[in-house]
Length: 315
Image (cartoon, rainbow, N blue to C red; front, side):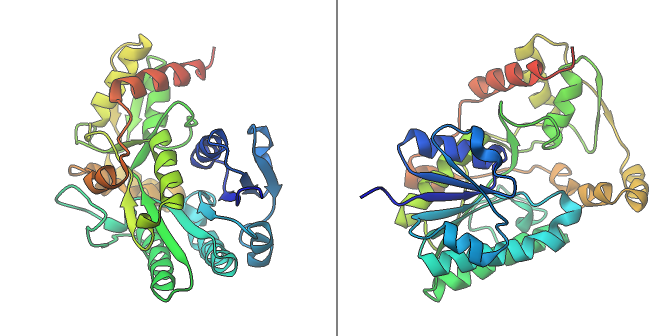
């Protein structure tokens, strides 16, 4: 009898990394995207479907061991419209099939903090994006406690890693300039410590949460290297790539607020810049102790990332 499949919704950097990891471990993997774009992933079955269609997702996930929510439904301006039906469909499919629901989330739900975040830090979101992600988890947690599903959630900080596209996240955008020896325009204080989570560490955490019953019923933080400022992270990347040290220009916050009146996505970015106004640190000691997952060595991560990102620079 073949092993129960693992169904991954989304084929971005996280979904793709998880699919490769599970396939390498001889798991049966199905990746669901609107376009079926995961066909390039070796050893993976790609399915084109709208994951916000609960009936369609339930049919795809029939007999699945776990469903992984690795979706990224558009930019911030799309979240209020696209996340609720998608989250509802994922929860419904997990309930109908008995698959474990593993959600990939972020740290927005914690809002501004004054100490390193743990999975047990209370959720106090300060903008609608954090409130939305917090509500999604609360829905899943209640369903778990009611015995309707088995649910868990992984939470990570901003991503870093060789497979991360240039357009994905602030650090990658800044690095696109600094690795090309250009001045980078940064949106907040570049000298405040900030956590950066490796994509492969996220994938390893998700794979573990989907297969270890000790994980179910609560959230977990992805193991992450000690917080490092934007300037230091860019300096490390530049030196690994043989590029000059970064030159940074801070965009005034008032200018972002004015720009947000005309460019909605700038308004949304402004809503999460509190993460760079004070140290934004992750304490995933509990995840490390429970599951034996540890963050990728920073020097190795930086070397591999700098090499990959440098190759994407225009000739």
